[in-house]
Length: 220
Ligand SMILES: [Zn+2]
Image 1 (cartoon, rainbow, N blue to C red):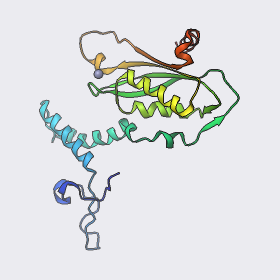
Image 2 (cartoon, rainbow, N blue to C red):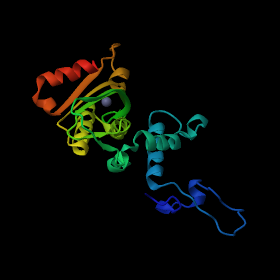
Image 3 (tube, helix red, strand yellow):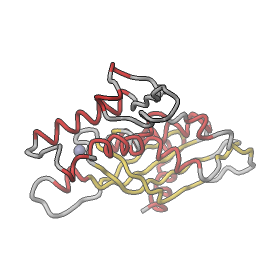
Image 4 (tube, rainbow, N blue to C red):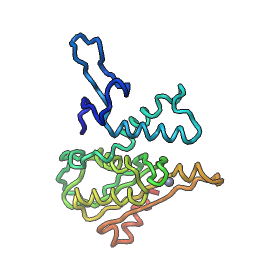
């Protein structure tokens, strides 16, 4: 992580307006706090977009927008900086249970990598434990980790399946994802908004048609 107190890119406190505690602090020394270089770059890019779609990035309503968007990306694209090992944090439990474990209706919000517009919906995740199960709250957090990146729904689906396979070494994993994509809803003339459905099957779910059917019946 970048040191937020570093004066980055040669920007001085007087020309970027990022004074956190400037003159008059009584200590004769200015504490200069600048934003990380990545944030400033995003802000500048947003200003460029605004000025090139016919807006005035300096007008009142938009003046704070570049900063808001840069901070929003921290959250909605924060999945790049999550460590799955830390996220799971040892929440794996030995059990004598070999039936399907299913977590249904996990709400997610993601951003399509083609248009940087949201897509969102629900994910359904199942696995067949060998000897371990994962804490219930961890699966939605793993979904969120991958959703909060620039994605295509197909890859999101596969990444969820693969991380569970890595973490749990289960006998099988099944993931189904439903998504509505703003890029197709907002563009074009169609007024219907189809839900896209993707799935990924590993291990016994891949081999056993009946098992797959059982999973799909449970989630649809
Ligand atoms: Zn798109």
